[in-house]
Image 1: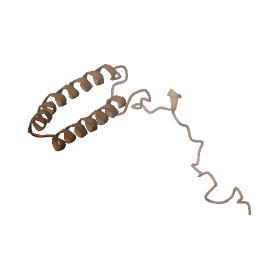
Image 2: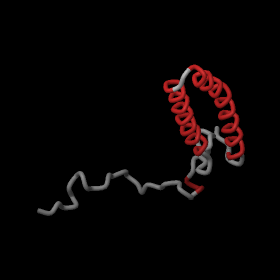
Image 3: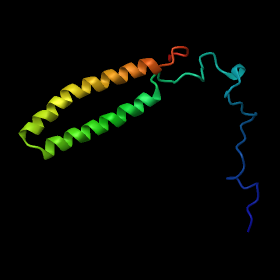
Image 4: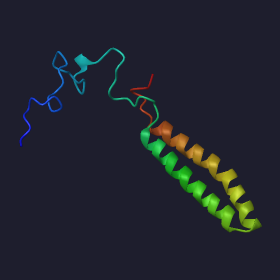
Length: 106
């Protein structure tokens, strides 16, 4: 049994006009729209790297703290005190370098 194209689920919605997506048509953009910028101003690869390195560091520190003796636990705490500021500083530098200065966020 074939489903006809007039079935209400398969029929395209009636929007009352031909939709115009402003993909590359600058005349269709609103005055405050800019398709070339990242909406939050943060380079998205930096967000991914932050999540990746944070999880990896947390797993390493947890393993060191749970599996080691006193010296290893002290080492884990020292590593956390050193690695977190270094990680934040490196990702902040990469973020500033990769940030889109031509199309800044709002």
